[in-house]
Image (tube, rainbow, N blue to C red):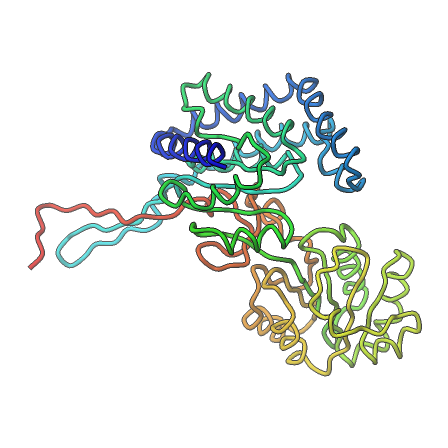
Length: 419
């Protein structure tokens, strides 16, 4: 335990020192590091996969699921995606140094706000080693140092990726401590990391609800997180039913195991008799189990009666809670009670009702006539993201480069003093 504490303390102190230099790096240097990392990743493919194989073999021996092993594997496709991701981040505008606003006071003091890095970010995540590259790239481009704590099942992969990142940093005369991967699988490393409030400015956990709740409950450092994605589509009266069918199907079936997949479908009672039978058949053909309210079960003989536990559950599977509602107010009340502030959508032809839904529903993304699956940094035009926040301080929704910065006030005077 004392050894782990010493390791984390040393990493945090080095990251703090590196952060001061990273904060003032030119865009050109940051982009050179990213593009150099991309080239090195591609060249080191065989070595990376050799280290990754150690993790995969260990995971197979532990009896990890095929889905977990799939997330763990650094396949050619995953490596190509990481390489492309690095190039995309390099091509994005640099947010650091942007003056967001300027104004002049009556005494001619010129006041402004300028975008600056957050400082040192601690990233705690599970299974997917590609997060090591994604997170490091975004943090670096936004001028931050980062300490990465991946899951123990990916330790060999993560350390190999860290070596490539640090080589690219070193070759460009950038402190390699700007990107560090915790080198131990000891679980106490997470607790020690969460205690370093003097050196680390922000913690971002990425993984299951259990991990995120542990981080929130044990951190002395501000945490940006979302616990779960309980997302809904509300099918309004008088909607385009063909459009609603396509949107709801895509929201649920395209990738049911992700946080922006639809977990609950709310249907206005006026449209339920015509919409639910054809929507239900489409879901049935795709293997979706429907857990419905009494009215849903009357309309769909194959629906399973929902229990109270089904409302507000993140299934992450081909299971869907369906409820017929009497009004849009009932739908919004349901979302307020059972939603997770992640993603909510309405399918409607009525502009006024669409505007009301946008204004009154509280979620990091509220959509009109589009799939919940669009709550993603790349899909929303951020270029890339480090995660989705459902807390409101200091970011709400997908976190891209801008969300990895903050602003400070600056002021230009000409001898003004306060009276």
